Amino acid sequence: MTFDKSEHLRMDEAARYLSEKRGEQVRWTHVLRLALDGHLPLVVEVPVSTQVLEPPNKDGLRPTIEGLWDLVMEGEQGIYARQEVESLYRRHSDLPPVPQQPHHPNLPAGAWVERDGDRHQLDPYSHLPELVYNFMALDAYKKTNPALPHGCIIGVREEALEALLVKEVSSKPIEVKWKDATITFTSEFQVQILVNDKSHVHTYEELGCEDQKSKTPTLAWETLRELAKAEPHRIPVSPKKSYARDERADKPPSYVKASGDKERVRIQNRVNEINKTLRNALNRLGYMIPVEPAPIVFDKKSNCYEPTPGFRIMVSSSYARDESDTSLM
Image (cartoon, rainbow, N blue to C red):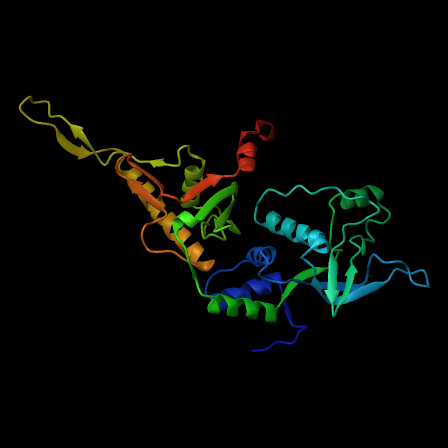
């Protein structure tokens, strides 16, 4: 199946397209993550008469462009576009924003676009008639370091989506073991999965840990996060049975159900869900892991759940600092 080069989908349309093809829910924030990870090139619809950061022509007018352009995301010229996409992704994934370095007001941080070998840097302050005479509003807008002018819409070419799907189907899974993987919580809602030095970043919803009714992290996600924060990395459980002595002296102690049994079952169910989620996540990323052992296993000696030997689960140093910073509370 082939597509005309001009055919493209906007973010929500691209998400629906991938959802139908993959047979699983894909959100437009997932599409942004694919782009940030280098799996999908993005395009941008540029409004008519959008100015570019180039010298005026002989009539004293700034050159303008319009139409569909490829968004430059790589190299030095791709920095501003990546910042814009990262900011958009994090804002709509309920993640803390990434601090951006302020730019010189006379050097706008406009994104670069390309088409047929032609490259231009967009003027991010183009199409702002409502702010031209409101200097305070204009100054506040400039401090946000925008990369795309008002009216620009990010999208993906259909041919790029098809290429991604073909690659996913044809790519041979890489066989790895749990000791080859490390999961690091970079924030309350996001983890970095490192497999043999290859990094993958996912929010709880992308990992499959979102409660469909409340749209919040599942209890399995919270349990995984608590495991990562624990020192040592363990989830203690209540004893399965406890002794009870009959008041009559001639009766020996007998086993009775402990009050912690329900909590024990709850923890076991959460661990089972974590194990299934982690295995499915790595499978989607193209890694094949043996059925045994599970990522989180039960240690009878210490009566707790812990990562299987070699498998690492932790929190980043920056996340730990954020939690201990009481000034933010």
